[in-house]
Length: 98
Length: 490
Image (cartoon, rainbow over all chains, first blue to last red; front, side):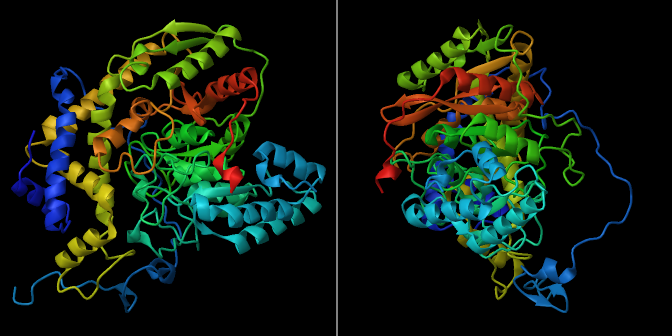
């Protein structure tokens, strides 16, 4: 299976990865090779098989709705790149003109 | 006082501490000295917390003086850098998390602290636990203590090399598709991956959440049992941890191996397996048979499909899990970017290495519209077939024996240009990971001066059986005649 440049760019956009031209080409080739190596999956008859998302015998784990103590705000924010007024600062999300 | 304290097993060191042959401070000092003298040539540690280790050791000695002794009291252990350690930098082998200081301990770390263990530092690993050679660490290469020109395996390569080079008594790792067992095999130590759900994943930095499990790297099987006993158990902070009894994994029994049925599947002894490794594993199975076990041929028909199924499922989960590294809350950032989209795409371009980008791309591709059914959903259905194979096999046998890795340690750089060849290092460990089963790799000999491991796989939550059989194997195998380790010539 070959993957083209547009597909690489589309997937990179979905994954929020900025790729260099070299990376785009390398990944195009490598993803094609990897996906080709996986073609055996297509040969399996899976029509009547249910998918397995997880293997443990647990369903809908719930807890009592009881408030518990959380970490102090300062500690949680200690790793934040930029903090203002006890909040995390991020660059603009919306265009000022919009 | 013995000069070779760093060579002890956990249980021998526990006995020595109990007898008063040495103190935890002496033991910890011996290991810190060992790390200082050789780790520049091994690269097993990313962070060494010498001061904290010595004060934990002193506290353990003080407790012992008052008669209070916990189960791992005063025993120095290394921690893979994938586990959150409060106040100690946790990078996950990535530039993305350089300088990240977790505000809390992973549950397993909390358990180790309660048990009195001394933490020596954080071990090197493939970035975000993705890799089979440790060459994808963003920081430095790890060298195999047996041959410094070879890889230690991955992704817990730092933990395995640290144990094999006697830089710690034991270490924690994590295993998603073989990341504890494969480096254990390549470095000649014991690697245990518990059942998915046996050990809490709270504070284990997520790679593929339906597969990730904390495991142990130790010098023998009893040490694996000792460590598992300390870290296993239900945790309300991990809704995938299962509330099932934790046994005394160290308990010995005189049952021997009579009545034991060992399953051997031809699918693990075919294409891709180095014949020399295959014959060592056959010998190990022979050792169990000589000791009274019965060998049964079983068929694990879908084994070959584990590789493609895993390398669709794990990267898909990774592409979702790693979405959190976007420069907002922690890690690498660029708050001066003109807008948030530019910040995210830029930070991820700079912070992730080549293998992580490859897996994110692969996962995002497999989940994307038009490919979801053909790849992701199909891989999950194949996962069912692989699990069903194991369920059927365990109707007939008690445990399954396979090689752990298809070859001994390979040369540094030899697979870096070929992702598919690198992925094939995991073909023997992936199937049991997809089925969530407990497995252990135990050393069973040497080929051309390099260690070989064999893998035992048990039904879910049967760690007690797994460890009992592994320990009996170790006893019947006896001490192996080991070739010279290159680390000893440093």
